[in-house]
Image 1 (cartoon, rainbow, N blue to C red):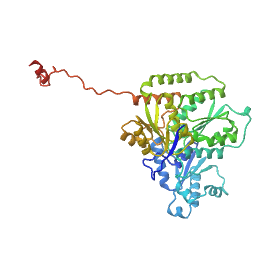
Image 2: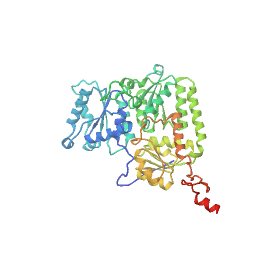
Image 3: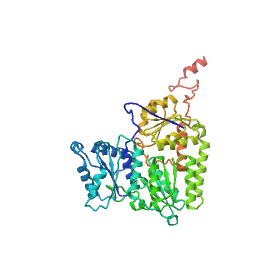
Image 4: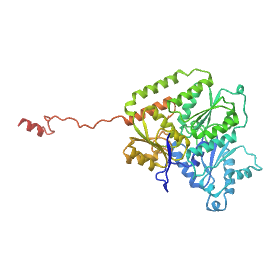
Length: 460
Protein backbone atom coordinates (compact mmCIF):
# COMPACT_ATOMS: atom_id res chain seq x y z
CA UNK A 1 0.00 0.00 0.00
CA UNK A 2 1.37 3.38 -1.00
CA UNK A 3 2.16 6.03 1.61
CA UNK A 4 0.71 9.47 0.83
CA UNK A 5 3.14 12.32 1.48
CA UNK A 6 2.05 15.96 1.66
CA UNK A 7 4.72 18.52 0.75
CA UNK A 8 5.17 21.59 2.94
CA UNK A 9 6.47 24.01 0.31
CA UNK A 10 5.28 27.63 0.68
CA UNK A 11 4.61 27.85 -3.05
CA UNK A 12 3.80 25.71 -6.07
CA UNK A 13 6.45 25.39 -8.78
CA UNK A 14 5.10 24.43 -12.21
CA UNK A 15 1.66 23.50 -10.82
CA UNK A 16 0.04 20.19 -11.60
CA UNK A 17 -3.31 21.18 -10.10
CA UNK A 18 -6.09 22.61 -12.28
CA UNK A 19 -8.77 24.61 -10.46
CA UNK A 20 -12.10 23.23 -9.20
CA UNK A 21 -14.26 25.71 -11.18
CA UNK A 22 -12.77 24.38 -14.42
CA UNK A 23 -13.66 20.83 -13.43
CA UNK A 24 -17.24 21.80 -12.62
CA UNK A 25 -17.59 23.75 -15.87
CA UNK A 26 -16.27 20.73 -17.78
CA UNK A 27 -19.00 18.53 -16.31
CA UNK A 28 -21.73 20.99 -17.30
CA UNK A 29 -20.35 21.06 -20.85
CA UNK A 30 -21.51 17.44 -21.14
CA UNK A 31 -25.21 18.36 -20.80
CA UNK A 32 -27.52 19.25 -23.69
CA UNK A 33 -28.21 22.97 -24.29
CA UNK A 34 -26.18 23.83 -21.24
CA UNK A 35 -24.30 26.99 -20.34
CA UNK A 36 -21.82 27.11 -17.44
CA UNK A 37 -21.81 30.43 -15.60
CA UNK A 38 -18.79 31.21 -13.43
CA UNK A 39 -19.58 33.57 -10.58
CA UNK A 40 -16.43 35.64 -10.24
CA UNK A 41 -14.10 38.03 -11.99
CA UNK A 42 -13.96 38.14 -15.77
CA UNK A 43 -10.33 37.06 -15.82
CA UNK A 44 -11.13 33.76 -14.08
CA UNK A 45 -13.53 32.74 -16.82
CA UNK A 46 -11.22 33.98 -19.58
CA UNK A 47 -8.46 31.82 -18.14
CA UNK A 48 -10.73 28.75 -18.09
CA UNK A 49 -11.96 29.40 -21.61
CA UNK A 50 -8.43 29.65 -22.99
CA UNK A 51 -7.46 26.34 -21.39
CA UNK A 52 -10.56 24.57 -22.72
CA UNK A 53 -10.19 26.02 -26.21
CA UNK A 54 -6.52 25.09 -26.51
CA UNK A 55 -7.16 21.56 -25.25
CA UNK A 56 -10.33 20.66 -27.18
CA UNK A 57 -9.75 23.13 -30.06
CA UNK A 58 -13.46 23.90 -30.06
CA UNK A 59 -15.54 27.00 -29.25
CA UNK A 60 -16.46 26.76 -25.58
CA UNK A 61 -19.77 28.18 -24.27
CA UNK A 62 -18.82 29.75 -20.95
CA UNK A 63 -20.18 32.88 -19.29
CA UNK A 64 -19.23 35.00 -16.28
CA UNK A 65 -20.88 37.40 -13.86
CA UNK A 66 -17.80 39.64 -14.33
CA UNK A 67 -17.43 41.02 -10.82
CA UNK A 68 -15.58 44.32 -10.55
CA UNK A 69 -13.88 45.96 -7.57
CA UNK A 70 -17.10 47.54 -6.32
CA UNK A 71 -19.19 44.36 -6.36
CA UNK A 72 -16.31 42.39 -4.89
CA UNK A 73 -16.26 44.65 -1.84
CA UNK A 74 -19.92 45.62 -1.38
CA UNK A 75 -21.52 42.32 -2.41
CA UNK A 76 -22.15 40.35 -5.58
CA UNK A 77 -25.83 39.43 -5.23
CA UNK A 78 -27.01 42.03 -7.73
CA UNK A 79 -24.41 40.99 -10.30
CA UNK A 80 -25.50 37.37 -9.96
CA UNK A 81 -29.14 38.38 -10.51
CA UNK A 82 -28.13 40.31 -13.63
CA UNK A 83 -25.95 37.49 -14.92
CA UNK A 84 -28.63 34.84 -14.51
CA UNK A 85 -31.26 37.03 -16.18
CA UNK A 86 -28.95 37.79 -19.11
CA UNK A 87 -28.02 34.15 -19.64
CA UNK A 88 -31.54 32.75 -19.32
CA UNK A 89 -33.39 35.45 -21.25
CA UNK A 90 -30.75 35.92 -23.91
CA UNK A 91 -29.64 32.34 -24.65
CA UNK A 92 -32.58 30.15 -23.51
CA UNK A 93 -30.53 27.27 -22.09
CA UNK A 94 -32.06 24.14 -20.59
CA UNK A 95 -29.40 23.98 -17.89
CA UNK A 96 -27.32 26.73 -16.30
CA UNK A 97 -24.36 25.46 -14.31
CA UNK A 98 -23.67 28.10 -11.66
CA UNK A 99 -20.06 27.64 -10.55
CA UNK A 100 -18.39 29.67 -7.82
CA UNK A 101 -14.77 30.83 -7.87
CA UNK A 102 -12.27 31.70 -5.17
CA UNK A 103 -13.29 35.37 -5.20
CA UNK A 104 -16.93 34.86 -4.19
CA UNK A 105 -16.06 32.00 -1.84
CA UNK A 106 -13.68 34.28 0.07
CA UNK A 107 -16.41 36.93 -0.04
CA UNK A 108 -18.81 34.49 1.62
CA UNK A 109 -21.51 34.70 -1.05
CA UNK A 110 -24.56 32.50 -0.41
CA UNK A 111 -25.47 31.54 -3.97
CA UNK A 112 -28.40 29.33 -2.99
CA UNK A 113 -30.08 32.16 -1.11
CA UNK A 114 -29.57 34.38 -4.16
CA UNK A 115 -31.07 31.67 -6.38
CA UNK A 116 -34.19 31.49 -4.22
CA UNK A 117 -34.69 35.23 -4.45
CA UNK A 118 -34.01 35.15 -8.20
CA UNK A 119 -36.62 32.46 -8.86
CA UNK A 120 -39.26 34.22 -6.76
CA UNK A 121 -41.94 35.51 -9.11
CA UNK A 122 -40.26 34.07 -12.22
CA UNK A 123 -41.37 31.08 -14.26
CA UNK A 124 -38.12 29.62 -15.55
CA UNK A 125 -37.72 26.95 -18.19
CA UNK A 126 -34.05 26.52 -17.33
CA UNK A 127 -32.70 24.42 -14.49
CA UNK A 128 -30.10 26.42 -12.56
CA UNK A 129 -27.73 24.04 -10.78
CA UNK A 130 -25.41 25.62 -8.24
CA UNK A 131 -22.15 24.08 -7.04
CA UNK A 132 -19.58 25.54 -4.67
CA UNK A 133 -16.07 25.11 -6.07
CA UNK A 134 -13.50 27.30 -4.30
CA UNK A 135 -10.14 27.50 -6.06
CA UNK A 136 -8.35 27.09 -2.76
CA UNK A 137 -9.51 23.49 -2.37
CA UNK A 138 -9.36 20.40 -4.56
CA UNK A 139 -8.74 20.42 -8.28
CA UNK A 140 -10.29 19.65 -11.63
CA UNK A 141 -11.23 16.13 -10.60
CA UNK A 142 -13.00 17.15 -7.38
CA UNK A 143 -14.78 20.08 -9.04
CA UNK A 144 -16.01 17.76 -11.78
CA UNK A 145 -17.24 15.23 -9.21
CA UNK A 146 -19.04 17.92 -7.19
CA UNK A 147 -20.83 19.11 -10.33
CA UNK A 148 -21.94 15.58 -11.25
CA UNK A 149 -23.29 15.13 -7.74
CA UNK A 150 -25.15 18.46 -7.95
CA UNK A 151 -26.65 17.48 -11.33
CA UNK A 152 -27.98 14.22 -9.89
CA UNK A 153 -29.38 16.02 -6.87
CA UNK A 154 -31.17 18.58 -9.05
CA UNK A 155 -32.44 16.46 -11.96
CA UNK A 156 -32.86 12.84 -10.81
CA UNK A 157 -36.18 12.27 -9.00
CA UNK A 158 -36.26 10.37 -5.73
CA UNK A 159 -38.19 7.29 -6.89
CA UNK A 160 -37.26 3.61 -6.75
CA UNK A 161 -38.86 1.53 -9.52
CA UNK A 162 -39.48 -2.22 -9.29
CA UNK A 163 -36.93 -4.31 -11.15
CA UNK A 164 -39.61 -5.48 -13.61
CA UNK A 165 -40.23 -1.88 -14.75
CA UNK A 166 -36.63 -1.11 -15.57
CA UNK A 167 -35.63 -0.70 -19.19
CA UNK A 168 -32.77 -2.25 -21.15
CA UNK A 169 -30.54 0.68 -20.39
CA UNK A 170 -27.54 1.33 -18.18
CA UNK A 171 -26.23 4.50 -16.59
CA UNK A 172 -22.63 5.56 -17.02
CA UNK A 173 -21.05 8.04 -14.63
CA UNK A 174 -18.03 9.08 -16.67
CA UNK A 175 -15.02 10.33 -14.73
CA UNK A 176 -13.06 13.45 -15.57
CA UNK A 177 -10.10 11.41 -16.87
CA UNK A 178 -12.16 10.08 -19.81
CA UNK A 179 -11.71 11.83 -23.16
CA UNK A 180 -14.59 12.34 -25.60
CA UNK A 181 -13.14 9.43 -27.61
CA UNK A 182 -13.20 7.27 -24.47
CA UNK A 183 -16.85 8.07 -23.79
CA UNK A 184 -17.77 7.33 -27.41
CA UNK A 185 -15.98 3.96 -27.28
CA UNK A 186 -17.72 3.02 -24.02
CA UNK A 187 -21.10 3.90 -25.55
CA UNK A 188 -20.37 1.63 -28.53
CA UNK A 189 -19.29 -1.10 -26.11
CA UNK A 190 -22.60 -0.86 -24.23
CA UNK A 191 -24.66 -0.78 -27.43
CA UNK A 192 -22.88 -3.91 -28.66
CA UNK A 193 -24.81 -5.79 -25.95
CA UNK A 194 -28.15 -4.38 -27.11
CA UNK A 195 -28.34 -1.86 -24.27
CA UNK A 196 -28.96 1.88 -24.28
CA UNK A 197 -26.55 4.13 -22.41
CA UNK A 198 -27.41 7.22 -20.35
CA UNK A 199 -24.07 8.95 -19.91
CA UNK A 200 -23.49 11.65 -17.32
CA UNK A 201 -21.86 13.82 -18.47
CA UNK A 202 -21.58 13.03 -22.18
CA UNK A 203 -18.56 14.92 -23.51
CA UNK A 204 -18.45 12.64 -26.56
CA UNK A 205 -21.59 14.27 -27.88
CA UNK A 206 -20.56 17.85 -27.14
CA UNK A 207 -16.76 18.15 -27.37
CA UNK A 208 -15.83 15.49 -29.92
CA UNK A 209 -15.06 18.09 -32.60
CA UNK A 210 -17.96 17.67 -35.03
CA UNK A 211 -19.19 20.32 -37.45
CA UNK A 212 -22.84 21.36 -37.36
CA UNK A 213 -25.02 23.19 -39.86
CA UNK A 214 -26.17 25.69 -37.25
CA UNK A 215 -22.74 27.29 -36.99
CA UNK A 216 -21.60 28.88 -33.75
CA UNK A 217 -23.86 28.28 -30.76
CA UNK A 218 -23.80 29.97 -27.38
CA UNK A 219 -24.95 26.67 -25.83
CA UNK A 220 -23.51 23.18 -25.90
CA UNK A 221 -24.20 21.44 -29.22
CA UNK A 222 -24.62 17.99 -27.71
CA UNK A 223 -24.67 16.18 -24.40
CA UNK A 224 -27.18 14.41 -22.18
CA UNK A 225 -30.64 15.96 -21.94
CA UNK A 226 -32.57 16.70 -18.76
CA UNK A 227 -35.16 14.11 -19.75
CA UNK A 228 -32.54 11.38 -20.08
CA UNK A 229 -31.04 12.25 -16.70
CA UNK A 230 -34.48 12.17 -15.08
CA UNK A 231 -34.94 8.64 -16.48
CA UNK A 232 -31.77 7.24 -14.91
CA UNK A 233 -33.92 5.49 -12.32
CA UNK A 234 -35.26 3.19 -15.07
CA UNK A 235 -31.83 1.69 -15.74
CA UNK A 236 -30.83 -1.83 -14.82
CA UNK A 237 -27.28 -0.94 -13.77
CA UNK A 238 -25.03 2.06 -13.15
CA UNK A 239 -21.41 1.85 -14.29
CA UNK A 240 -19.09 4.21 -12.41
CA UNK A 241 -15.65 4.94 -13.88
CA UNK A 242 -13.37 6.68 -11.40
CA UNK A 243 -13.17 6.59 -7.60
CA UNK A 244 -13.80 10.34 -7.37
CA UNK A 245 -17.43 9.79 -8.44
CA UNK A 246 -18.15 7.66 -5.37
CA UNK A 247 -20.33 10.29 -3.58
CA UNK A 248 -22.28 10.94 -6.79
CA UNK A 249 -22.81 7.19 -7.23
CA UNK A 250 -23.98 6.91 -3.61
CA UNK A 251 -26.55 9.65 -4.19
CA UNK A 252 -27.79 8.10 -7.43
CA UNK A 253 -28.17 4.68 -5.83
CA UNK A 254 -30.00 6.14 -2.83
CA UNK A 255 -32.45 7.98 -5.07
CA UNK A 256 -33.12 5.30 -7.66
CA UNK A 257 -32.20 1.97 -6.08
CA UNK A 258 -30.28 1.04 -9.24
CA UNK A 259 -27.32 -1.24 -8.41
CA UNK A 260 -23.91 -0.12 -9.56
CA UNK A 261 -20.48 -1.41 -10.53
CA UNK A 262 -17.61 0.85 -9.57
CA UNK A 263 -14.29 0.59 -11.38
CA UNK A 264 -11.14 2.65 -10.75
CA UNK A 265 -10.55 2.90 -14.48
CA UNK A 266 -11.07 1.10 -17.75
CA UNK A 267 -7.54 0.54 -19.03
CA UNK A 268 -6.26 -2.36 -16.92
CA UNK A 269 -7.18 -5.83 -18.16
CA UNK A 270 -9.07 -6.83 -15.01
CA UNK A 271 -11.20 -3.67 -15.12
CA UNK A 272 -12.08 -4.23 -18.78
CA UNK A 273 -13.01 -7.84 -18.05
CA UNK A 274 -15.26 -6.83 -15.14
CA UNK A 275 -16.95 -4.21 -17.32
CA UNK A 276 -17.64 -6.70 -20.11
CA UNK A 277 -18.92 -9.35 -17.71
CA UNK A 278 -21.33 -6.86 -16.12
CA UNK A 279 -22.77 -5.94 -19.52
CA UNK A 280 -23.13 -9.61 -20.44
CA UNK A 281 -24.97 -10.32 -17.16
CA UNK A 282 -27.35 -7.37 -17.53
CA UNK A 283 -28.12 -8.00 -21.20
CA UNK A 284 -28.29 -11.78 -20.99
CA UNK A 285 -26.24 -11.96 -24.17
CA UNK A 286 -22.86 -13.56 -24.85
CA UNK A 287 -19.85 -11.32 -25.33
CA UNK A 288 -19.70 -10.22 -29.00
CA UNK A 289 -16.99 -11.88 -31.06
CA UNK A 290 -15.33 -8.57 -31.96
CA UNK A 291 -14.85 -7.69 -28.29
CA UNK A 292 -13.31 -11.10 -27.62
CA UNK A 293 -11.00 -10.54 -30.56
CA UNK A 294 -9.96 -7.13 -29.21
CA UNK A 295 -9.02 -8.83 -25.93
CA UNK A 296 -6.93 -11.40 -27.77
CA UNK A 297 -5.21 -8.59 -29.68
CA UNK A 298 -4.33 -6.88 -26.40
CA UNK A 299 -2.86 -10.10 -24.97
CA UNK A 300 -0.79 -10.58 -28.12
CA UNK A 301 0.45 -6.99 -27.86
CA UNK A 302 1.54 -7.65 -24.27
CA UNK A 303 3.67 -10.56 -25.48
CA UNK A 304 5.11 -8.61 -28.41
CA UNK A 305 6.09 -5.56 -26.37
CA UNK A 306 7.37 -7.21 -23.20
CA UNK A 307 11.06 -6.75 -24.06
CA UNK A 308 11.05 -2.93 -24.36
CA UNK A 309 8.34 -2.31 -21.74
CA UNK A 310 8.99 -4.95 -19.08
CA UNK A 311 10.83 -3.41 -16.15
CA UNK A 312 10.67 0.12 -17.59
CA UNK A 313 10.89 2.86 -14.94
CA UNK A 314 8.03 5.35 -15.30
CA UNK A 315 7.06 8.51 -13.39
CA UNK A 316 3.50 9.87 -13.49
CA UNK A 317 2.00 13.20 -12.49
CA UNK A 318 -1.80 13.22 -12.79
CA UNK A 319 -5.09 13.53 -10.94
CA UNK A 320 -5.83 10.62 -8.63
CA UNK A 321 -8.25 8.72 -10.87
CA UNK A 322 -5.95 8.83 -13.87
CA UNK A 323 -2.91 8.02 -11.77
CA UNK A 324 -4.60 4.92 -10.35
CA UNK A 325 -5.87 3.77 -13.76
CA UNK A 326 -2.44 4.14 -15.37
CA UNK A 327 -0.71 2.54 -12.39
CA UNK A 328 -2.91 -0.56 -12.66
CA UNK A 329 -2.13 -0.77 -16.36
CA UNK A 330 1.62 -0.56 -15.72
CA UNK A 331 1.28 -3.51 -13.35
CA UNK A 332 -0.36 -5.48 -16.17
CA UNK A 333 2.50 -4.92 -18.61
CA UNK A 334 5.37 -5.40 -16.16
CA UNK A 335 6.51 -1.77 -16.06
CA UNK A 336 7.53 -0.11 -12.78
CA UNK A 337 5.95 3.01 -11.35
CA UNK A 338 8.94 4.65 -9.62
CA UNK A 339 7.55 8.14 -8.92
CA UNK A 340 3.96 9.31 -8.51
CA UNK A 341 2.65 12.81 -7.83
CA UNK A 342 -0.98 13.91 -7.55
CA UNK A 343 -2.24 17.47 -7.04
CA UNK A 344 -4.78 16.46 -4.37
CA UNK A 345 -5.02 13.84 -1.66
CA UNK A 346 -7.28 10.84 -2.31
CA UNK A 347 -7.75 7.55 -0.49
CA UNK A 348 -7.66 5.76 -3.85
CA UNK A 349 -3.95 6.58 -4.16
CA UNK A 350 -3.11 4.13 -1.38
CA UNK A 351 -3.83 1.22 -3.73
CA UNK A 352 -0.95 2.14 -6.06
CA UNK A 353 1.99 -0.23 -6.37
CA UNK A 354 4.61 2.35 -5.38
CA UNK A 355 6.36 3.25 -2.15
CA UNK A 356 4.89 6.72 -1.79
CA UNK A 357 2.61 9.15 -3.58
CA UNK A 358 3.46 12.81 -3.22
CA UNK A 359 0.73 15.45 -3.13
CA UNK A 360 2.55 18.22 -4.93
CA UNK A 361 3.55 19.74 -8.26
CA UNK A 362 5.74 18.99 -11.26
CA UNK A 363 8.87 20.14 -9.40
CA UNK A 364 8.26 17.34 -6.90
CA UNK A 365 7.74 14.89 -9.75
CA UNK A 366 10.93 16.01 -11.47
CA UNK A 367 13.02 15.60 -8.31
CA UNK A 368 11.71 12.14 -7.53
CA UNK A 369 11.91 10.99 -11.14
CA UNK A 370 15.58 12.01 -11.20
CA UNK A 371 16.30 10.20 -7.93
CA UNK A 372 14.54 7.03 -9.14
CA UNK A 373 16.18 7.03 -12.56
CA UNK A 374 12.89 7.27 -14.44
CA UNK A 375 13.02 6.53 -18.16
CA UNK A 376 9.65 8.08 -19.08
CA UNK A 377 7.45 10.86 -17.76
CA UNK A 378 3.64 10.80 -18.05
CA UNK A 379 1.75 14.04 -17.50
CA UNK A 380 0.00 16.95 -19.16
CA UNK A 381 1.68 19.54 -21.36
CA UNK A 382 3.02 21.41 -18.33
CA UNK A 383 5.40 18.48 -17.72
CA UNK A 384 7.32 19.10 -20.95
CA UNK A 385 10.00 21.29 -19.36
CA UNK A 386 10.61 18.71 -16.63
CA UNK A 387 10.97 15.95 -19.22
CA UNK A 388 13.45 18.05 -21.21
CA UNK A 389 15.57 18.76 -18.14
CA UNK A 390 15.54 15.06 -17.25
CA UNK A 391 16.41 14.10 -20.82
CA UNK A 392 13.59 11.56 -21.07
CA UNK A 393 10.47 11.39 -23.29
CA UNK A 394 7.06 12.66 -22.22
CA UNK A 395 3.81 10.81 -22.83
CA UNK A 396 1.07 13.43 -22.65
CA UNK A 397 -1.95 12.50 -20.57
CA UNK A 398 -4.57 14.43 -18.65
CA UNK A 399 -5.57 18.08 -18.86
CA UNK A 400 -4.48 20.39 -20.39
CA UNK A 401 -2.71 19.30 -23.57
CA UNK A 402 -2.13 22.38 -25.67
CA UNK A 403 1.07 21.65 -27.60
CA UNK A 404 -0.25 18.73 -29.66
CA UNK A 405 -3.40 18.06 -31.64
CA UNK A 406 -5.92 15.31 -30.97
CA UNK A 407 -6.03 15.18 -27.16
CA UNK A 408 -9.83 14.83 -27.21
CA UNK A 409 -9.64 12.10 -29.86
CA UNK A 410 -7.10 9.99 -27.94
CA UNK A 411 -8.47 6.60 -26.86
CA UNK A 412 -7.26 5.29 -23.49
CA UNK A 413 -9.95 2.81 -22.42
CA UNK A 414 -11.03 -0.68 -23.36
CA UNK A 415 -8.97 -3.39 -24.97
CA UNK A 416 -8.34 -1.20 -28.01
CA UNK A 417 -7.25 1.81 -25.99
CA UNK A 418 -4.98 -0.29 -23.77
CA UNK A 419 -3.40 -1.91 -26.83
CA UNK A 420 -2.73 1.45 -28.46
CA UNK A 421 -1.23 2.80 -25.22
CA UNK A 422 0.98 -0.28 -24.95
CA UNK A 423 2.31 0.18 -28.48
CA UNK A 424 2.98 3.85 -27.80
CA UNK A 425 4.97 2.98 -24.68
CA UNK A 426 6.88 0.26 -26.52
CA UNK A 427 7.84 2.66 -29.30
CA UNK A 428 9.14 5.17 -26.76
CA UNK A 429 11.33 2.50 -25.15
CA UNK A 430 12.32 0.62 -28.30
CA UNK A 431 16.10 0.67 -28.95
CA UNK A 432 17.26 3.12 -31.55
CA UNK A 433 20.18 2.79 -33.94
CA UNK A 434 23.62 3.03 -32.32
CA UNK A 435 24.69 5.79 -34.69
CA UNK A 436 27.61 3.85 -36.23
CA UNK A 437 29.35 5.81 -38.96
CA UNK A 438 29.15 4.25 -42.44
CA UNK A 439 32.20 2.28 -43.57
CA UNK A 440 34.50 3.93 -46.11
CA UNK A 441 37.11 1.81 -47.87
CA UNK A 442 40.71 3.06 -47.65
CA UNK A 443 40.90 2.44 -51.41
CA UNK A 444 38.10 4.87 -52.23
CA UNK A 445 38.82 7.79 -54.58
CA UNK A 446 38.45 11.46 -53.67
CA UNK A 447 36.17 13.68 -55.73
CA UNK A 448 39.12 15.07 -57.71
CA UNK A 449 39.98 11.58 -58.87
CA UNK A 450 43.11 11.23 -56.72
CA UNK A 451 43.48 8.32 -54.38
CA UNK A 452 42.58 8.84 -50.76
CA UNK A 453 45.54 9.40 -48.40
CA UNK A 454 45.05 6.04 -46.79
CA UNK A 455 45.13 4.38 -50.20
CA UNK A 456 48.48 6.06 -51.13
CA UNK A 457 50.02 4.98 -47.88
CA UNK A 458 48.98 1.41 -48.53
CA UNK A 459 50.43 1.41 -52.07
CA UNK A 460 53.67 2.92 -50.80
